[in-house]
Image (cartoon, rainbow, N blue to C red):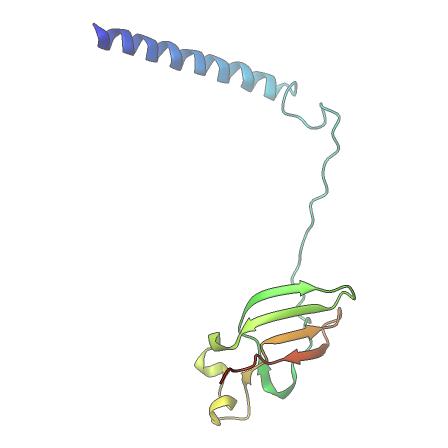
Length: 128
């Protein structure tokens, strides 16, 4: 008997939820609820980002950048990048091992102008 009462309550709850969903769906479809235009709100501007293949400019000394772990812009719109030199693949660090004229890890911290020119670099100090 208890199972019958529970299943009856369950069916009643499911039926009411379905009825509510149909009514709310109909109101939403008619634009009565859920429409920003119907509520007088303006559409928000959504930023669009695109990659710039020319930024940054080529780095000097055969430097390449590993996995970037930090990026910030300062008050002059210069871009600061922190990267992990240890994440370079073996083929990206031939110069480090004196096996070729190219390439080696860039210093840990790099500062670029807004147009992508390298301004400053800082190499992490190694402890004693």
